[in-house]
Length: 378
Image (cartoon, rainbow, N blue to C red; front, side):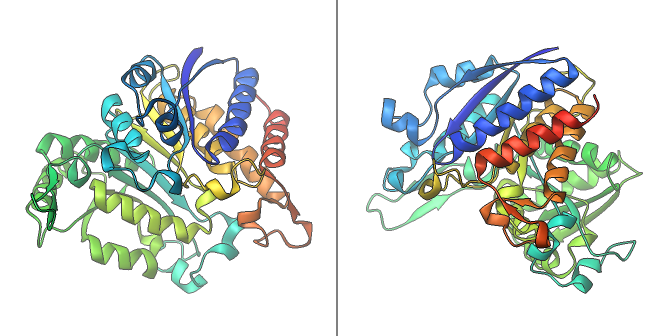
């Protein structure tokens, strides 16, 4: 099969990690008989410097012609004083909206190789787990193109007050719920809908819509939590959660909290989908795939950044946009094999490798994953 992928390296360490991710994609293509064609696009701060805006209309149109988007990172202190409409992060919002990717999937699991990086005690990690073993495996499904980030906003004439409006339709809520339930159906069949229905009218609509949608999935256990309680429960007993479905703002905050529990934000991938994903082999469902870390301009180009989140994002692309489960599992297994070998980038140094620890740069880590992937059958 042939697939076209829009590459948006972006700013800071974005190009560093995307370079390694592309090598892994090409190796997976060679092993399993696929061809990946790339279209490199500029968005974020680099686009501002070049054309004066974070995302050109023609860039968005070019992305629409591709099957999926692989994005590095955008932003940095250089552009922080610009008005909101010209900030690099605006490129992300416009890409998400323009490509119709309304559901963001952020997995957060405790990797055994990085157990020592988790700040929680074993007894806390065991709480809520049916098997009683320390650990967690959470998928946060965040609504991505509605809510506070896209609602009406502004300031008073004298600039002394400002407002941002949370707006949701039943249809927007229902479609992201269905994405979450589809994910839960192939996991542990548990969904927790997170809102603030005791205060917010938009959250009451979320809860009403969830209660109706849940009736269609009787095999899946559905529960509800207020967002403040959920934030606490992630620290008290993260193992109780399987799939969390929530709004744009709440999902943004909770997924960052969950990332801390894994030990390093440099390990976490994400997928933003225009559908439920994980279709049949060869299916092409538009998605934006990106590591959740920032642009870290202070280490850009220094061969320091951890490329594993970007590489794991390619595994999500293979799985959700192209339906290539075997290929996705092969990439994930290669990453695990490298961690088992004791190789660590600086952000995860001193964690779980013991005497076999070896510190690697961005390129060396990418090369190690590449070799581990090539060794696997396929």
